[in-house]
Image 1 (tube, rainbow, N blue to C red):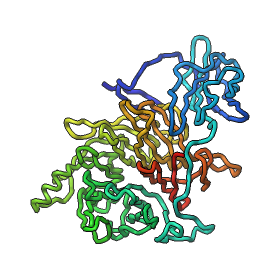
Image 2 (image 1 turned 45 degrees about the vertical axis):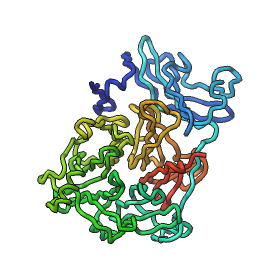
Image 3 (image 1 turned 90 degrees about the vertical axis):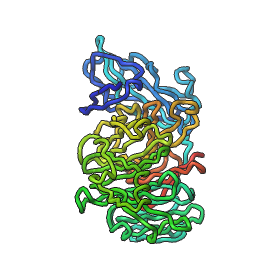
Image 4 (image 1 turned 180 degrees about the vertical axis):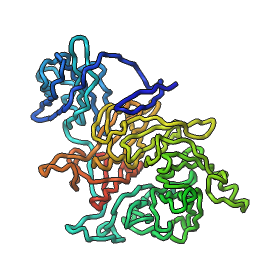
Amino acid sequence: KYVEISTKGQYITCPASDINYIDVFDQLTPPTNVTATYSDGKIHLSWDEVEGATSYNIFYSCDDIYSSYLEFSKSPYQYNIEDTSYTIDTSGSDGSWNVFTNFNGIIYFYISANGEGRRSALSDAAHVAKGRSKITVGTLCGYKSADDSQGTVYGPFETASGFNYEGSMAFDPLYPTRLYIAYNNYPNYGEIVQLDLETKTHTLLMSKSKFENKRVRNCAFTKDGQYMLVSTDRDDNGNESPCVWIVKRNDDGTFSDESSMKLLAAYKQCNSVAVHPVNGEVYFTSYYGGEVCRIDIDNYFSTVNESKEWDGTFGQSCFERLFSVMDPSWEISISIHPSGNYAYLNCINRGCIYRTDYDWNKKKFTTPYCVIGGGMLGFSDGLSYSAELNHPYQGVFVKNREYSGELDEYDYYFTDTNNFCVRALSPMRKTLRTITGRAPYDDGNLWGTEDGSGFEARFRDITGLAYDENTKTFYVLDHNNRRIRTIKNK
């Protein structure tokens, strides 16, 4: 059973099982320009007056980064505030906020308006960072000279440079210290490079000519890890343009320009490829139709092993079209949950994320529904139905120890490129929070190169994201800053 909801002018669909309650009210306009600042142990809230409102309610939710998570408060922290501002003493001296006296993390605030038996929906969230972030941001390698003339240099991390333009990242499942970057934009069209975290070296893995100097969108791996799958974005041969390649490891376990490679699928304008972690079938997306397609990888291997022809085209039944997300020209990257139960579709150029659930009987994903963002490009944290994104590029699932024993024990982290930050979606709690980035500085910009506390760090136009479970470290392609950044839990 599904429920269809209209939000911000766009219809979204969600499972009825995800709805805890439905509240119907005579609507006032939600408060706007909600601000929250923290200083000297006090939180100062303010918002614009709502026409017809006689009082306001304050709601909150809290997020202790990388630690405990406090759910959204179903009841207001404060009822019937007649003014358009409020100050909270977090020291607990007045008894009003003592539960958060030792809180370290982010507190989100939402305001609703009341008036003559009517009330509004919740406002967009405003947040403050109280205490000190439990994560730190660093720079692994790379730099940008004053005139951006450093070019690309391979070798030790100390002198390495490059990391230009958009790209996606992936760890090698058989060699977990090898981190790959697949470059999407000129002049790095088609290149895949390697960051060896053990030897601390930056090397060219496969050159542009390997993939015919076309856009490489990402790489993934077959279930056994023996083959790399590479998506290429092109339409030079219409619907028969090469879009997914399968690359076999060399005898020494490496990949290079000499690695054996065959065409797995031919279609137009592929944006990403992913592999189901349990059943092993392959999925790829198409900008041309906003589509998600499925490849039976077992069928491919049995065909090739029998020396039969496999040309990768739809007409030869090499793949099937499952569904369109919405319309053509949707740029989609796909991230499959480690359990295989569902996948998230990052709609990069539409400012939203869809979810598609897995049908275990049919062994394929089903019609997707929007879980965050309504296609409105912007920035806001809080409840997922009202949160806003701007270019959600690549995401990874990370286990949260505080969710142990719950139905879903993972958070979904992703790069929000044009908001210059890394954000996390909590699937169970239906909330979005910013992990790091967008720290305010005197220069007035939300982008920069600063390392340090998660509340102090800045990025610019980040795209690729990978996570090392062994070291609890995120790696970020901060391509406008020409750097590889790290995010670690203290």
